[in-house]
Length: 356
Image (cartoon, rainbow, N blue to C red; front, top):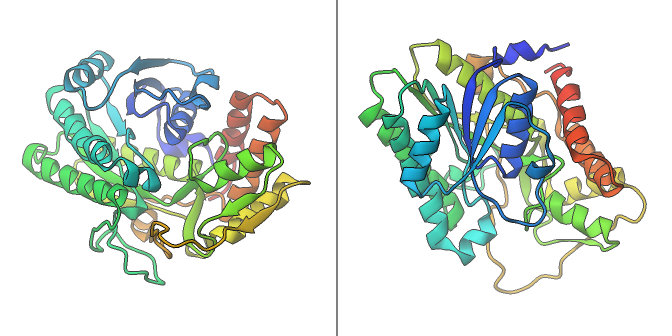
């Protein structure tokens, strides 16, 4: 059994989370609430179907604002007086970045600058995690996983914006945080899945929407390979890293992969079929008809998390099969009318009890 305290002592710790209303932000707030932290969320999300409003969070304050509004951001951060900051606010979708490249670059790059500029001016902050993406790497369609030392790149606006955010964090860390008083790190996860993600153009949300309305799931890129992982795996990795930054004076900046084990990469088709099987009767999956002019997405992408395993002692707890099963059960139970907050709490308790 794995005790929650292996993640560090979060009881009473003040944590400031940008983008707290998003999928990962909602799960992070719920996890930190379970661990006894005091959280302040800063961000906004007016989409009609969100997990966040359904959660009954303890010791949590939500502040509506835009990370591009520097004054509002700094004021909220100063009021919260956090020890730890997790910057999640972003335009997080590859396909949306083709439609709105300017706002994608503004939010993902300049938003990161403004978060770190606020950190400079707010006393008491000890650890900052800038959440980027596995898509920051220059994609060579390797059959091996990308390591933190591999070259950054970005063929689409989203990937380029996240790679640029990495450069921003590295530059500001060396320019303004070199004294080691505030630890700055960037974190890169794989394709995170789990209940409560309702974003457009993501595989499992698309599947859940299709299946609950009796429609087939149509796959636009069925042979693409991704590093699938349950959202709680990278989130616990972030907390392990933050705990190290809080308690160590060395290695105060770095970039870290938090991906699944190497044998957990799978094609979109395989994951979709596994999700359909766990959903149950009526779930149908089929490939889209080939079309000219379809926007190119990376075919093969996995990340190597050896550094986090070796230096932080972090390990994934749920493999891809279990992550997909958990997600399918979550979405199906939610579609049947069960309480989303209780479904999240059940997954958190099961996860904390799982052996890595």
